[in-house]
Length: 442
Image 1 (cartoon, rainbow, N blue to C red):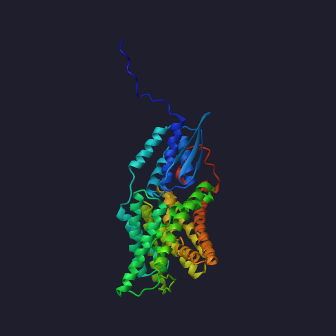
Image 2 (image 1 turned 30 degrees about the horizontal axis):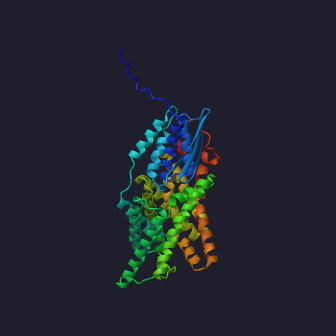
Image 3 (image 1 turned 120 degrees about the vertical axis):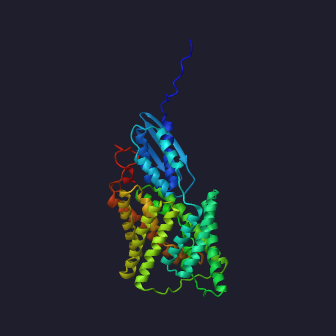
């Protein structure tokens, strides 16, 4: 008797291990894009509900996830790690759009297929686009820190060279600590040598251009993880917050110390110079323009789509210029001014996110990065190396509170605009329904 053909179309039931691994795949992809812990946990819980798990407990750090899932009485624990610390706002938004469309009755294979499709459609700005964006953004930031035409032009070339080196090194898998040191050294050398060459050629009178010196390495400031660290602290996701904040301190410190080493080795005396005031309306216009340019450039570095770059740039230009005017004309404290500006940016980002498919973090972070106090941080490093610990502690405290104000401003905006942030929601319990758009929660 002939053998009956087997039915290969019948698939065996998915194991709980397969379901957990697909969820970890989602979580690690979000981490690699720069997502905060709460966003990762909420997305994983939504995915767990969609593929039929009954419970999910997860612990999320900056580079790894441990998850335990239940399927009835059966349980499984797994661990995943990803070492690519970076930011990809465009991919982050696309993944969250996919998560928002998950519905109950799906399986792990469907989830993995959605994630593979997202990866296949991955889009990045070209090398020279990011180099130009970095150069323009840092030049704009230089003006906001008191620089003028000479400093801004020099910063343009110094930051561009540094960003080119950074892209090449990261593309070859070099450690961030080493990459940040080499890039800071390169940008500082280019900045100093260009000014010295102009002075030697009689093109300019050499002054101590402090604002431009630190602005030339601003592309190294980890604005995205620094902001998400503040938001993780607010959400009591301490493990992730401490990991992110420690990473930020390490890379910022390595860049800042590298700048000081180069300046010290070349015996290049840096002092804050006297800035000639500009007419009010000229100054206001230039602040709006340079704030827009700086925020737009940093959004490109975060791989945000053009529309997101433009929206973030408009919000950053108006909010940053407004807080500078308030600080100068009504003596508004620096920390309060930055916090109010971040609050405004957060509210605008939420409204835009409601109307589009883009996330709030992609819209808000580029707009607030330009408010990070880079010049005072460098002054604190110089004070430490010169043994003036009392001045260094005072400056570091001011810088810390300004950065915290940025995080608190964005967090308050979310509390005001989002019910999910007004209540301390436990992401360990799966959502009762998937009808609510996940972007409203994260």
